[in-house]
Image 1 (cartoon, rainbow, N blue to C red):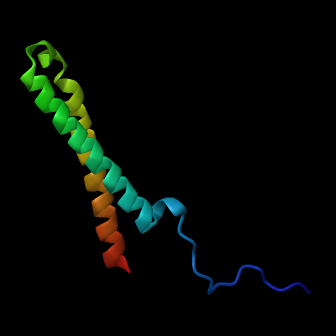
Image 2 (cartoon, one colour):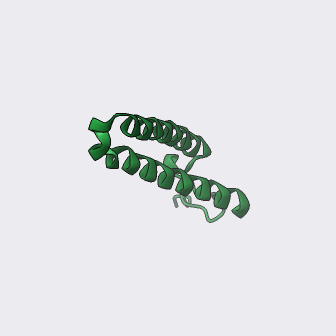
Length: 82
């Protein structure tokens, strides 16, 4: 008679994309994108010929901030649930 290969006491494995390292990397990359977007906003305000394209760096700033806040909230929840 074969033994049970799936014991009840075994801990569930977290996927790699839910690790603290990946969240830290995501926050770092989004911080770089946020700074890049802020530099883009300053450049578009400085040169009059680029005023029509201000929306591009603003979208980058908003999206990178949203992803960064989402990752920080997930890290905080993960820390307090353990």
